[in-house]
Image (tube, rainbow, N blue to C red; front, side, top):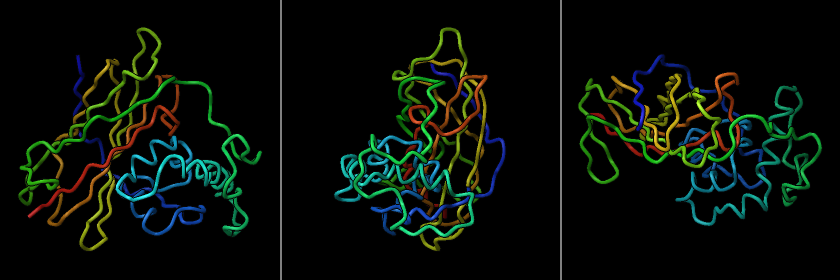
Length: 244
């Protein structure tokens, strides 16, 4: 039986943004699309599987998991995440080679931890509760509170018996007209796992405008940190919300 959790705990500033175009294979259109689904940093990109990245940019022709593997986005992102704290300037020619398979990544790329959850988390749906839908748009009256409901699919995760799971939900949005007004909300909590789990963030408000929404979810065992890792992090494109 799905568990229901409510309420955004706090509004937070948008995450720091890395220049994803440093990665060979990512141009302005791809970077913009990645931002639209909440991928802003090298570390976030490095934590995802090629299939997850391809799914998040599925509307861009030609961007497949095979291309992402061939161009070694993951290896490049890991390398950049490892050195991003330094003050040196990074040039594209100095990065991880363009066409190196993942098995041949440079030794400076940190390997993902083996500890923690095993398997793959996915987000089945992101719903805006309290809105009316017209096609891919959801309509809201100005100052009308609405809920965000995320349905998680945990059937692909192996969780220790009787364990509970911590979660962190981040909701991202950007004004589609002004390209400004970027925001992020975050909420954390804990639940008892099931094949399908519902997390509901209640009483949200947006100003007038048209917003592209996205969400990310990170899961961890109670004694582990909530950090992006392949398999225990998932993304979803939340579509458009129009507030008038």
